[in-house]
Length: 253
Image (cartoon, rainbow, N blue to C red; front, side, top):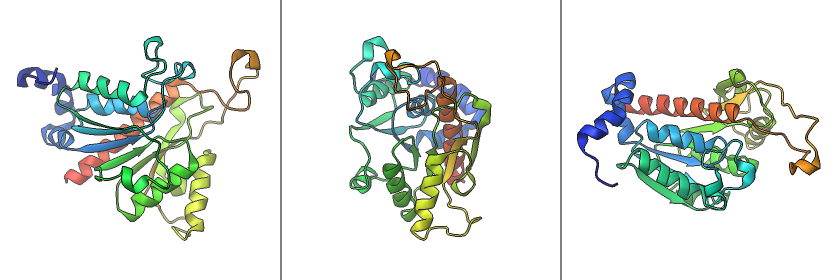
């Protein structure tokens, strides 16, 4: 379905326009959001962006759906095992909004390709990557090119969605990955003063990480890592998208 009658389109997104306002919704329709990492957080974020009427979304990931994704990732079902996550989510977005423009980048972001991948420049980037080197490269690129960036911290091992917080990178807690990134940026001379803000909005959890002692090798899970709960990963995503919309509204103003 490529054509959508105006009255049906209006019915689909009337609720968005009513709660955010017509001017904000019209701005969302013209906005381009890039989501990097279409996993336990990123897939739910893409869903929320599409259902809010964002006009253009770029999906960046090279991974395929695996059985181990089923507990937390939106596209993971029996029928999609082995399929590319970006392809599944792109089609889902088009089913939600046939007018949407979806760009697919079937690749992982790296320090070497970050400049290429972020060209053309989106209005805002949502980082849902779990690799420190890639996150650092993205932070540096967005900072020096003045591209608005929302960063998801680690959701693994977290159980309580009510302990999710939003703060500048300078103020995050209980997140080793974000702490490491903060240290690496300061080592490069960026925001070396303790109270100086990085200008990078982060979604993180103050919950203590939890791993059940009942998980054993026969269960097919790596005992050295943490499990993950969809109630937390999806909540990370919804809060991240709420921050994306706030930043888009600021750009509109």
